[in-house]
Image (tube, rainbow over all chains, first blue to last red; front, side, top):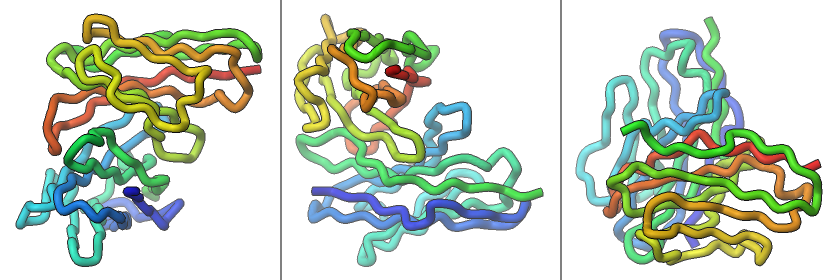
Length: 115
Length: 114
């Protein structure tokens, strides 16, 4: 069974600093996709970034980048130049290829950006 | 497109009552998912439709839960004989096919069972 582990229940970062949110995953499938979502206190799930298992380069989207280390089965999210609006819950998720199409989520990391 | 919509946004019910939630996915998405999220946790998969066919159900989906997607458009999730443990946020999501397909989430229905 696939599993996503986020070991940091809460993180604090100073405004304008960079922060790394950890995510490790467990799968024996060679083909899978990794996603990060942001969930502010208002509750909506906002897609941030995607990394495919066969992608050669780490994904980047604006201030978000994904530090993908396939051998270690880790997909850490890096947020550069943190802003107060980045304060939210962040979830790492995985989708396998094949019959199971749903996302499997980790337990999340609550990020608080300090002014 | 206005995104995935869910109704109602909030539902308070008494234990033992039945409740039904509705989800309208993004129109060009043929996949629709239901998740349940409890406070401080990540969403947990409940069930998945491809068009009108319900292709997968989690073991979390007890026999008190039923979901439908008639004509492959909107979907409903019904919980019969609600229990206090059913209190959670119920999220609907939709996507196109493909490993990298973006899954768009609705705002959720917050269920409180008293």
